[in-house]
Amino acid sequence: MSMETVGVTVPLIGGEYRFACRPAERDELLEAGRYLDDKMREVRDRSSKLLSLEAIAVMAAMNISYELLRQQRQSVETDAVVNSHVQDLIQKIDAILSKAEPAEL
Image 1: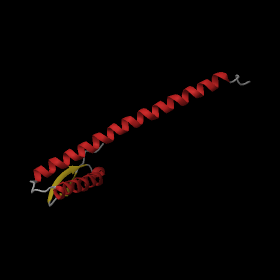
Image 2: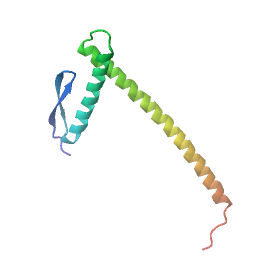
Image 3: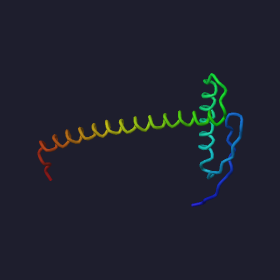
């Protein structure tokens, strides 16, 4: 596996930051940068006071972390519901099969 990296410039709220990544990851890195830039701009635009770039970045990071954790919790809950339904279906199938007569060979 190649460890080749490329440099990618990501614009964030008026500045540009350089990152290194594998060529296959370039588009995802740029997409992540656009997402972060949007979140930072939302924080800046919602604030009633002038915030430093660092404060904006920290607040955006907290918002993104919160979103991620909420989605992870929802995913775990959804998995539990799906697994419960699958187990119910397996029990119903087993019950039906146990009542069925063996097939003739």
